[in-house]
Image (tube, rainbow, N blue to C red):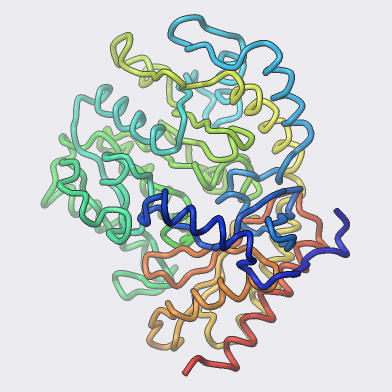
Length: 449
């Protein structure tokens, strides 16, 4: 598929075939299962998608960062095909197999920390988080978990409890799990303490310290779980001092630090793990999304004494570490390691373009990002920072109608996030950004009545 064809809109999305499929979707799939676009995809290649009506799009979503190496990567597909010639599934609890062990070894070697580590393979990011909490509680013999506002850790019950956003994730599903304590994250654009970084003295860390002296006993806290860049919360980048402050608190009080790298890992920020930007070594790491090479796979990684703490049989699952996913994961890590040097350059190109848009369009209140994990926060007024929710949704819609797939984020539903594949070409990256620029310009100059 040549770049000259991208984007190409033959039928205004959604086209007739997509509309027909949407009727079936509405009949057989719960309405609570959300989707951002009403288009159905027929084919993917690299950073390009073709829908069932022949429209071609630039993909800045990458399956919500599950395809950091792009669609239909030849090397991953080849590894999968070779495995399928042997066997598709053998429950690891019954008859172990080499690919699980090799992948566990590889993950242990690439994760931060020179100490001995062990790796549990699971099916999803939420499952990785659930197991991180389980091992932390078992190891420390404490029940409490500290989590943050704006966080997203998954949709299963403990992960959902740890998630900060009520609507749509938690609403109506209570009661949720006990012993979770929530604190403000270092959301510097909307500082909960009305201060300015860096003169704030990282008040959000001091707030946690004070709470551990006045309202929560550290003897009850097993772990602090955090995302170095909050994903669903709006790509909120925790300052280095904040993340280092969390490590210090954990060291002082005998608390485990759980680093959720499910969206930030696998090279997304220019390093294999985002925590590497902060010179901090966590006790436990969760990873997923692109780990599986496009197949369901996630992992909980921790110091061997932590991971070995639960009783035999206490961790696992029938499909955990499926052999097809494992061979795809081994190849995915190999590919990401090769792509890492390219990410900072592409990220700089994209960040520069977004900041240029910010100078032109008052609706862009903040631009932030690291590597190819980028976001713009839209506001109705830069002084009040009132979230521009409707305008954000209109921009997303107009973008896919013009051939660019982007997705939203943010606790206040006013953030647009960009997650292009790490191997996207500069030409295609700029084509996507051109569409975004054009759409924001149009939406800014043509307000809806």
